[in-house]
Image (tube, rainbow, N blue to C red; front, side, top):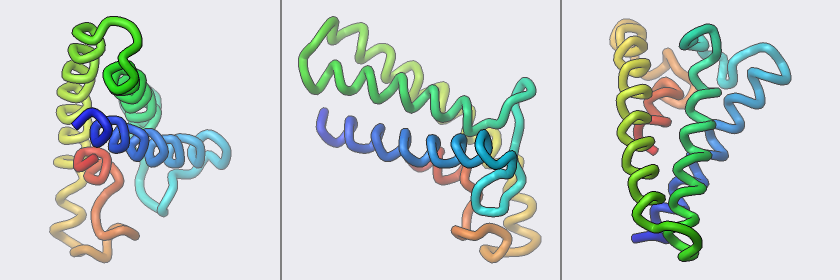
Length: 118
């Protein structure tokens, strides 16, 4: 279970890092999508830092370094916050999906939906 959690958090970190890095370096959102903003910054930046916290917490749990209970609380708390955050932006993007179908997004779903799934 700990290895799975750590692996999924790494996948999320890479995914959000790609999205955030693309936005930071090119000024455009990856995958030709609209870029949702939160408090003046792209949502993918927040996703990156949430996945970073989850990766660090799950790494502590996996490798047995530091305080396991604190790490578990960080992982659970940030995961819950991440689900709410990504869920909010996914719901906002769903009307385009219903209007134009799966072709509205390069990968079939908005990137926030993939962040939510991860």
